[in-house]
Length: 324
Image 1 (cartoon, rainbow, N blue to C red):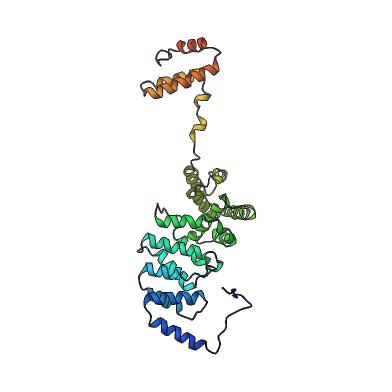
Image 2: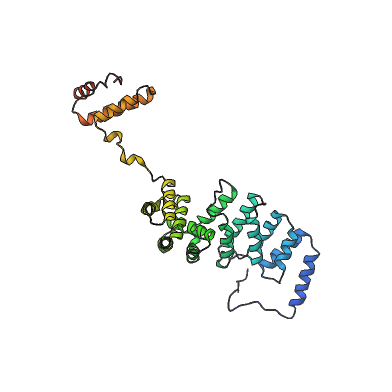
């Protein structure tokens, strides 16, 4: 394959036979079957032969068959993963069409994610994926495609653009961008300066109440426990929306552990353990047996020998009642 000469220096220009060749290709497309037309359009686009209306013609040949449209668009990817704007627009329509099957919508999302390798397509891709940001997608194919894209470490190449979306006024795009940035900041696959850039971008989201509240919701949905301290710090935020979002994240992440203020078995003295034993009377033999082992260990930590332990429990009328 010859080197690609795309760029500011090398640009294709028309020559004396361009019009004749274009007319011949148009005629071939007009008189070809749908399958042949898709093959020809794909080859034309891949070899950078293009003219106004070419992509639309290819999509028209695919008709209303979503599977055929997706297959046709997939064949249009060049080696640098560039797609024409018309193809990106067609994918966006499929991805956001609630009448389409989840599998087709997920397929369109994955093709859009593939096109995200190139920066110019990012706006269309963000618009498509943002429609699903913050939604409960369950275990659907759409959810899988969404998770794949938002957790892809290759998104580090878009941190600058994502940072702008993350602080923008469009709530859906903001939620998507913050989701990607939080995933990048907490990913084990992202290292060095890229990780620092992602962390910095997330930190900037705390600056305003609306972006902070949004970020707390993202932290909850992504289960990003790395931000537990920030969640706790905002529980008493002066802004009600932020405080409520922090409480939601606090509960979702399982940070509301009430056992910290209660005594654990290993921290109890023998009196407390014996009282607990009364509560366990009538419970299963297996549970009582496990409790006997525990109570023996606790008493052993308080008294030097077994006679002291036995005497201590008997004085409180617990030893016989527990069957020890």
